Length: 286
Ligand code: HXC
Image (cartoon, rainbow, N blue to C red; front, side, top):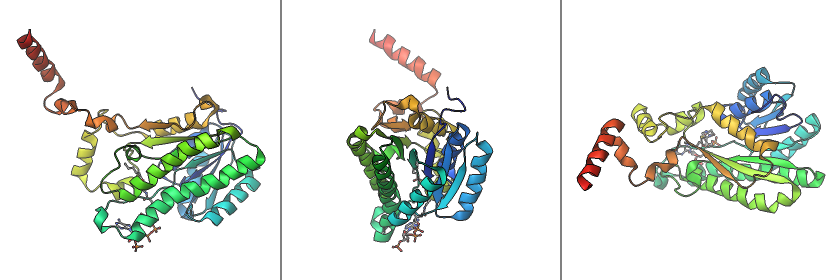
């Protein structure tokens, strides 16, 4: 459904685009004609990431910028530079995040602040600078925020700062989708379930048995593929989704539905055995 010019004429900044899901989205966008800017804190990671994005490029330019999204002035300077380098900026993906496992009673204020600063303040900083640029230039644009499945209704134990930060980002997505629609600015969010990336896995997966448990919660029976997430990101950023704003699309193989009251029955026996059992119950009734 995408063609090599689906994102032609776009210049998209992807924060934390040097690795993981950010890099996967950057590579996909580049392959569909977009200019790509990535930013992050570590130059070496960005340099390597930019090379990988260039491999996929279909005519666009790729540049990287060393910047910590927590620093508003640095974000402002970076976007000024991006606009000078590319002539314009049309899209922003707030992907940079921080997370670690901790019992909440053991969190230090600094630990809470570090994650919320990256996730919520970082997304605000980039969105605020970019939004002002678009409004000032009377230019339409697109913002995509990476949240999580636990941002919406459940929260999550042991990742309190991330849950709080991402819930804030989701609220920002919806608030601004309404407020800035009049300027032609769309904001949407993606809520990924478990996608194994180095950054997330080394911080969030305690050991192999935890990983097995994790996998068993996903009715699709597998983790997500970065390419699947990148396809969704492209769709939401492209003109194909021009009437979609304020939406949060979950991509998790059904993991969030685990609370369904009778779902556990599926774990009691193989499906064929269950079906026989259901039929025998039916016969007993009738
Ligand atoms: C408890 C910790 C900690 C840990 C850091 N801190 N790691 N506390 N457990 N594992 C505390 C420190 O002690 C310090 O507290 C404060 O946090 C700041 O730590 P620094 O290392 O100085 O901060 P900084 O260098 O800014 O690093 C930020 C970070 C780090 C968030 C802590 O982990 C980071 O840079 N992460 C970026 C990459 C990342 O996390 N990727 C995963 C995202 S995956 P004091 O009290 O001394 O100030 C994701 C997906 C979610 O979000 C969905 C999954 C299914």
